Length: 543
Image 1 (cartoon, one colour):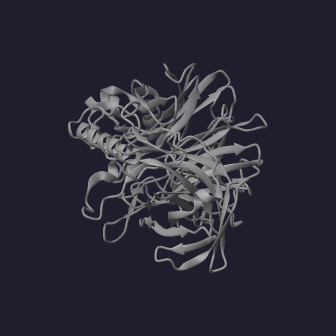
Image 2 (cartoon, rainbow, N blue to C red):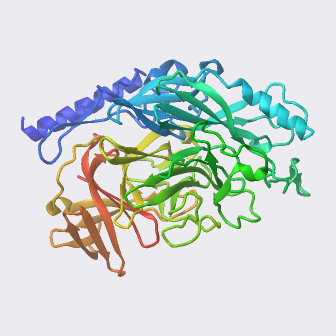
Image 3 (cartoon, one colour):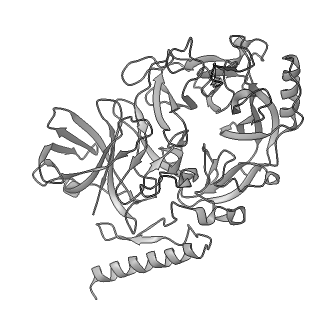
């Protein structure tokens, strides 16, 4: 038996064992049951083998296997040797018992193999119901005796020697009219000495507060259709915390209603610096979509704010459109935490301009059904390695053969490397992080067939990869061999320049990565960049 035949046989055997394990609904041992792949240099690397479709492991009884699963609206921090991710109360099939607590979290030492740790909180803090009904009484509304809650979108940060966890609590009762948003939401704060807890609740930080522009009761047209126009100024969900270089602390929050707000905090308490005495104390708008003076229902949410000391900019990551399918991630930046935030095209996002660049979108590589719902991100800078990471949930796109498949409610962790372009914009890897060894990439290694995706914005429509080839004589061809342009490679910067026949040049950054769609998964070369339209370009070499 040749070495090649042995390698193929070993890979097939491993795949068969993994398939049998899944069919028997065994707990997937993501730290042990890995696929072995052989990079081009002959070294051995074990690729994660856990499946994307985890319906076999979705029950509460199987929660020990939820490491990379049921992750939604992630927030990431590090404590000692472990990375932690906290997320929204969400699971495929809503299998989590109410008595289990709130805010699921997991931890990892390598950012690939995740251990499900359970729930961070024992339940909903008592102050939420009290505050809710006090505010309803002031508005002349009856109390809600048994509120139904959702606990969403936490943000975890280390502040001094403690960890802070900001969380969203949404009241889902709709006794005043239809629709989830007929009741207010709250952002609370908890603190702990460890990311393992226990957490000490500190109460309310901010809430959704009516500003008097619209009445509390919802309106309907002549056909009985709801006319939504928010009576709250800012929707108090989706918090993101930042300690600015000048020592000031801010909470960035908001979703859909009238845009995204920046609220200055008291550094000692972590709560609103000036209290919440007037509507102006709830923050200033730093991002909107459309006419921000009249549009009170804007399809943007989930702000994540970070500061890059190398560029001197604050970066505001935003989720556009609805989460189940069309979700996509945009970025704007500013020298000031309160804006104006400006896109790569120079347009003012604070005033409502469409935000670019767009760095994630629905997509599909070959040999896979594709991914959607790729937004509501967290961005994490690992101080120990100086590497940046970008995490979201990914929802499986229904296969063409079964468009009604409920796989879109699966929520897999998509953690990717984030790198910075020469002109200071963030871009993310086209494939999930898999701890692939960082090997030198030479120009000769780029020659061959690639899958290429331009993530042009298309509402609810995935961008599908096309085949290009990089030839030894520096040409770009399509699958049929027709020349599409030329290329060059700057080894020092690891930048591949794709010069297309239409006169445009795309400079993309080359990196080592994992082909998650291959069977078995194997090491490959990836590229990522931005085109002239401010949307991401992704590539993956195929073997």
